[in-house]
Image 1 (cartoon, rainbow, N blue to C red):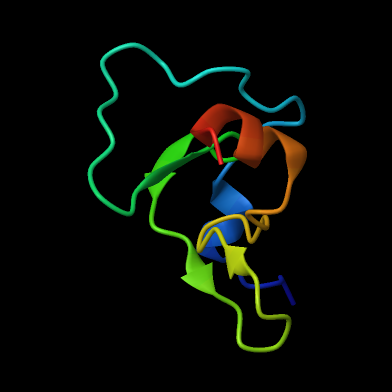
Image 2: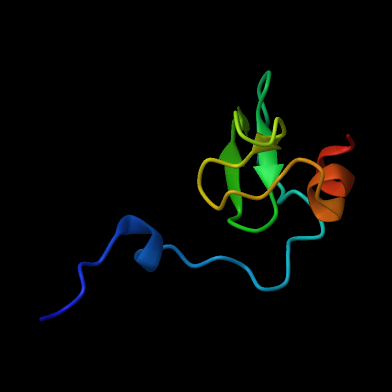
Length: 72
């Protein structure tokens, strides 16, 4: 029996995070650039740990590259 494929199996995450926001990307209010999934996202609060997380790859806003790229 084959395992079921989920959406996260199809998404490719960057092993080496982005070092800058690509040209032409404009962030609106409350939007951030996630360097690991290379998407514009609105970080959601994780009720368990109390930090903000990317809804796609689950990286925290406390990560070095997330803070550096988004100037947090």
